Amino acid sequence: MGKIIVTNNPLIGERFAALYEIEFYDKDYIGILETVRDKIHLGHELLSHPLAGSIKPNETPYRTVIISKDKKQLDMNSLTLIESAIVTTRKFISNRPTPDWNNVALFDFQTVDLSLIENVLNNVI
Image 1 (cartoon, helix red, strand yellow):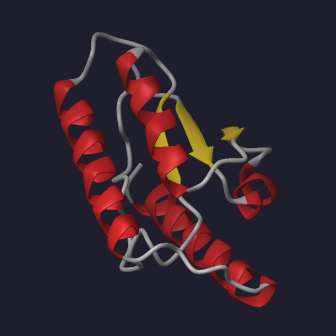
Image 2 (cartoon, rainbow, N blue to C red):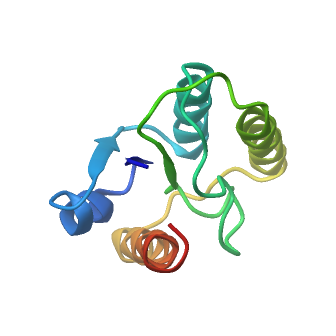
């Protein structure tokens, strides 16, 4: 099964561009989740959890999600999971917005996101 990596993390493209199809979006965390949701409506399936990791959605601006390259019928499990992730993320952000991090912190969050996806690609998919 082919994969598409949907991300707003520039390190993902640098690391995986030669290996996987990368869709980079200049969007915030919630924007990435909404983009993934729209792709699920088109028939893609979630291959990684949209809220993977221990960093709360309102703490980091970066999110990377892996979806299937092939389109099939609407996968209700994927849709339910992404919709739940969007609701959870909105709740966290409404309670406490993502801070305006400095460049050092942003790079750290990019690195954590990259590490999570490397782990998924190496061990699960």
